[in-house]
Structure formats: structure tokens, C-alpha cells
Length: 208
Image 1 (cartoon, helix red, strand yellow):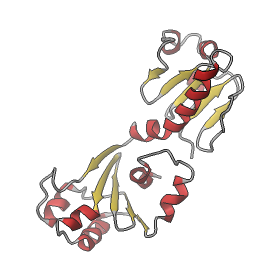
Image 2: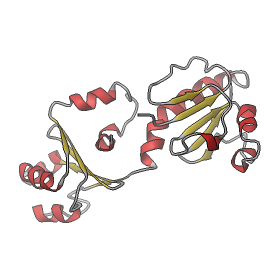
Image 3: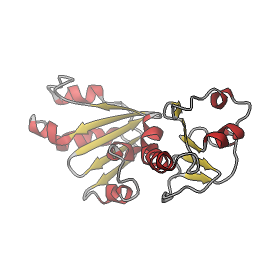
Image 4: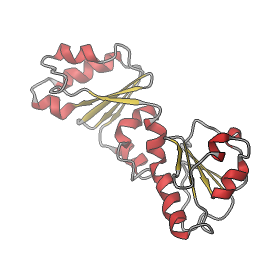
């Protein structure tokens, strides 16, 4: 699964390539790549030359690395600025999961205090009737996916307020087409090794 693009002409200095990013070491126009993925152009002049007629790039501000929020960024080549290049490329690759997932999905925390959920039925009322996918992390969190919306249920918090969490899981599971029950957290650990800096990894595993 690829969740980002890096387009460059010169070598990416001091950067270790990751499996979840497409690296293109050649001139490519923005219209010729998958624009649903967050994209970084490396090299100010290189970026301009790749997109000579695209106003997004021709009107870009050399003082601002963001062209389109969550979608399109640029960074200086090593020859243009050594320090900025090394820091900027790694920063984009580290933030690519946030750019990719946050732009595609909304997240709602079904907090019993904030939503004033006093009874079991109150929780069911704010959950989707049809749930496409579920992900249960140990006995701590339950994440639900409906269309492009993710809902989080903190089972430990509901247990604190004396809800029957076993009933919650059973009732929710009856509405869910498929669920991953990550009993020991091994499923999460598999992806954590790939995305160790992605702080919201758990909530988005339900989409993968």
C-alpha cells in the first residue's frame, strides 16, 4: 500500500527510503501521477520545470513549502540547501500517513461524558446502524468504519462508568460486516514497525 509520492531529480541525501512511498527519480508532471496521494517535489527549479504551465506550481511561494494542504508540498534539493533538504524530506515522509488518512476520513470519539451517554441504548443510538468494518484493540478500544467516517469507543472508559462492555462488543459486532479482533496487539505491532511515528495508527487500522 502506497500513501505518498516523492518526485526528485537529484539524490535524496541522508534519507532512508520507506516502502509506503512511491519514489520517482525523474521529471514528472503532477497530472501524470496519482493525485489522491500526498506528494512532495524535491527541488525548487526541478518542480517548476516539471510543471511549466500549471499555475499551482508557477505561483508557488518560495517561502512556503505547502502548496495544497495535506496534498502537495515541495522541498529544496541538497544542492539548493543542505540543511533544509535533509530535514524537509524526512519530515514529509514522516507526516505522509497523517496527510493521507486525515484528508480521507473523519474521526469521532464516542465519549460517554461529552455525549452524555447514560445507558447502553444511548451508545447504540449514536453508532452507525450498518458498520462496514471494525477493529478491536485488545479489550481497550473499538474502532468502527462507516463510509469515510471512523468512530472510536474507549471500552475501558465505558467499563469505568459501569457499562457492560461485553454486551457493547456483541451488539456492535452484530452490526459489523467484518471485524479484526486484535487480542494481543500483534496486528497493531505489525504496522507499528512500518509507521512508528504515526501517532493515530490504531484508529486508522480499521481502514487498511
